[in-house]
Image (cartoon, rainbow, N blue to C red; front, side):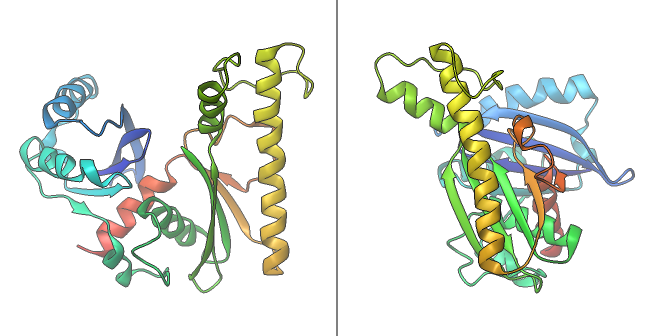
Length: 256
């Protein structure tokens, strides 16, 4: 079993890939805290292991993608002490053995390179990867595997929190699709603005990127919020929540 750890700004995701079935069979998330300790991770993951019958000796390899450098030593220590295995931490030099490449390997987020790697492995041609996370990102890989660029926008929940934190009367609302683009009360008004506004943003960005390139691309969506926007139905060829985890696995295996 391969364990992929994706440490993002909001959550740390533990994904378990079974080699026999070639599927991601388990996923567990904990909140990303910069003061996180090894003991806290062990307490949370221990119960999950028990509930799902996961034995640590069945884990054959571990790969980590992290955009939160402060917690990297904690994750590495957790792997060594609790799982009794060394992990592979993805970084700029990790991309030398891949089919994809970037001119700025130390600047692009490892999560985005994991997305690009997994997407290019799937299509082997030009692809736009839309990742609905803390930030909404559009990563573009060309037909030759070269990363052509990245576009970054505040994520949906980030936008809602910004409204809540920077205004006196606007509440923090749930991400639900309202019946109309015209809100009849404050909550529905915010939901309409975020949901329909971001739907238009995504559609417009995809159109603009492909117009600039001069050709059509495969389009794949990922991230925890990728399935929320029903208003974007038909915009993506594939929605794959495990895309980043798959990229972690591919990059780790390419460097072992």
